Amino acid sequence: MRETVEVALPGRDYRIEIGTGLLAEAGALIAPHLHRRKVFIVTDETVAAAHLAALQAGLAAEGIAGPALTLPPGEGTKCWAMLERTVEWLIAEKAERDDLLVAFGGGVIGDLAGFAAAVVRRGMDFVQVPTSLLAQVDSSVGGKTGINSPLGKNLIGAFHQPKLVLADVDVLGTLSAREFRSGYGEVAKYGLLGDADFFGWLETNGPALAAGDVAARVRAVRRSCEMKAGIVARDEKERGDRALLNLGHTFGHALEAATGYSQRLLHGEGVAVGMVLAFQLSQELGLCSQEAPSRVRAHLDAMGMKKDLADIPGELPDADGLIALMGQDKKVRDGQITFILARGIGEAFVARDVDMGAVRKVLKAALADR
Ligand SMILES: NC(=O)c1ccc[n+]([C@@H]2O[C@H](COP(=O)([O-])OP(=O)(O)OC[C@H]3O[C@@H](n4cnc5c(N)ncnc54)[C@H](O)[C@@H]3O)[C@@H](O)[C@H]2O)c1
Ligand SMILES: O=C(O)C(=O)C[C@@H](O)[C@H](O)[C@H](O)COP(=O)(O)O
Ligand SMILES: [Zn+2]
Image (cartoon, rainbow, N blue to C red):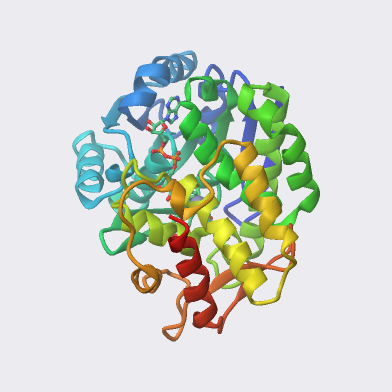
């Protein structure tokens, strides 16, 4: 089973291959992008234990050597120290500017390794081989790379597009249920931001997707990548429409910072809770009916996902503390926070000059329910 999605960026277009058996074919698919038969793999300990040997075998089948740097798993790895370790490893290994780095892992590895590729010898090429659902539907596509600052999410980084994305859905079989659900937050995002039919399909097929239905997984990854590729091709550097991909993230990133980028809240979980808040804010502002946020919550609930601030363990800042954290968002303009709001399911839009009184009211109500 194989699907291809094109990212049509002039001069930097690339393919996203989605399907089964792609690790075994990695060598053949990557070889056309190589100057010599060697790549540099960056991965994490969990992914390495489960799948690194299969990737290296796929490369070796075409005579390609693939030395690997294996980093600790988890969001904490998106930091200066791990960036330094990755960059120094590439330099010590004599990775050349024309060599290719392979980011083999979830979004953490993709973002960190992609950023390392952007800066080593002023820019090496890289290929994304995403292994989490989240990375296959979202982070491996579009060229946003970077690390976190203690003050805010993804505040240090670069736009650096990969040469190729290989999304092998077979590897999702070893993902934990919690990590799968976290990635599902971004899948649901695509329906909610711009494709009501896809959201309806997810309401019916989400359980099959979670249960491991390969055809459903390929379809969900393809549709998500298709939507992201279309948006990125229109607005690579997020001057306009690309901000739609941030639905749920203005709240979600603040919650991730508030919980110290820890296991208390995974990225996709923060996005899911943030999307409910974005729909509640849209309703509070009279933009959408009460039915819309209820439908979003009902689907997340049916999928066993976090959907409310009450689902986040431990202390959280108060409403003003969360608003202060949102003030570090990269969409802030003239000191004003930009929100992604919705007129209904699949009808998101970028909103500036949002009444902060309404934001405070929605957050206070959500915090009071904890
Ligand atoms: N660049 C972008 O456009 C973009 C988009 C969305 C999210 N992100 C970023 O992505 C990150 C989240 O990505 P993530 O959820 O993949 O996190 P992650 O990379 O931490 O992966 C989640 C966990 O799953 C494990 N894992 C990954 N693949 C596995 C597999 N096949 N089998 C078993 N375990 C596996 C990892 O070791 C890790 O413990 C966040 O930092 C977020 O900001 C970036
Ligand atoms: O690719 C994008 O653009 C996105 O916004 C996708 C998001 O899912 C992703 O989490 C991204 O890293 C957020 O970007 P940021 O610029 O808000 O840090
Ligand atoms: Zn995201």
